[in-house]
Each structure stands twice: as structure tokens, then as C-alpha cells.
Amino acid sequence: MKNLAYTAALISIFFTSCSSDDDNVGEPLTVTAPATYSFERNDQSTVSFSGQTTRIAMASELVSAFNDFDNSTEASLLNMYAHEAGANDFSDPALNASGKNIRSKTAASRDYFNTNSSESLQIKETFEGYISSHLNELYPNRNTLATAGQAGQIADGESVRYVLSNGLEMNQVFAKGLIGALMTDQMLNNYLGMAVLDEGTNRSDNDNDIVVEGESYTMMEHKWDEA
Image: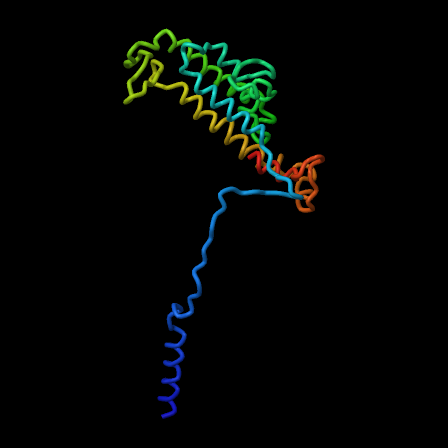
């Protein structure tokens, strides 16, 4: 009899523990994502990456100019790539006034190229070669229908694509190449690399909220934002 009572008690505990939690559900949690995010210290934004937006704007205008055969030349595209402050290489006066350019940050990360300047130079010149081959081979054939081994244009719906004799669109090769050699290299191998992110007292300064002189951000915060 005692065994029967003991077994009944165990069964009762089992079913109680396995009861549904649905009976205890409260109000559903609603999370509303903000339309914009603000990161501030002492009522001032800690976010600053103007150098990056400048180079992205330069690259965007340069890639667009690849197929502007009426106005672009090999020299003008090379000048946009290796822009010098004050030169009228872009349509935006702010870009012309900037001392930044695309070439200087292509294959220029601290982790990969700090001690390998020859490889860095080779990659920079590869991108210059993309510009030169595009203009030199395509310009005289821009109105020719492309065929195997023949540079020219290919109809693609309502748009036209321009390819070299090997079938490559050099504006696309240039643009996609910069995603790796400029943007990804700078992001992962430079700003987020330990040689830059943890340089000097960056880590302890960040832990102690010691900001860059005259700024509202710590150096480590700044490197993350630049990445």
C-alpha cells in the first residue's frame, strides 16, 4: 500500500512539472528599432569617418566615369584614382579640395603591406592597368559589336555593356577589385587589426574613457567607426 502511495505521488509530481508554461505567459515583448542610431558622449557624437566616405564617393564617381567616353580619358581617370588636393578631378568641389585619394589606401593595410611595399605598389599599378586597358582598347571600339576576341559593346536589355577582347568589363573588375583591395583590406587588415586597434594605449584609454584630444571619441572607438 505504501509503495502504491509513493508511486502515485511521483506521478503527480511528474505531471505537475510537465505542465504547460503557456498559462504563465505575460504581455508579449515588443521591440521597436529606432529609425536612426546615435552614439554620444557629453551630448556630442562619437562617430567620425569622413575619410572613408570621401574615398567611397571618389570611387563611385570614378567607376561611373569609366564608360563616359565623351568626357573621360585615360589621364583623367588616372588622375581621379591618384587625386591630389586642389585638382579638379571630380564634379564635387569638396572631393577636389580633399587631400585624400583612392590609390594611397589601395593595398595599404598595416597588417599585410607595412613591410611589403613592393607588393602594395604592384597591386596599385594593377588598378592603373585596368583603367589604361579599358580606355585604350575600348575607346576605339566603343561602337563596335563585341564578339569573341573583339572588344566592343554588348546589348543587355535596355542597357549596354562594354567588354574587352577577353570578355571582361573593366569598370566592374575595377569596382569589385576595390571592394577587396581597398575596403576589405582597410577594414579587416588595418583598422580592426591589432597593430592599429590596440596600438599604444588605445585599449586602456578606451577602458577609461580617455578621448582623443579635441574630440569626443576614444581612438579605439574611432578605428572601429572607420572600419
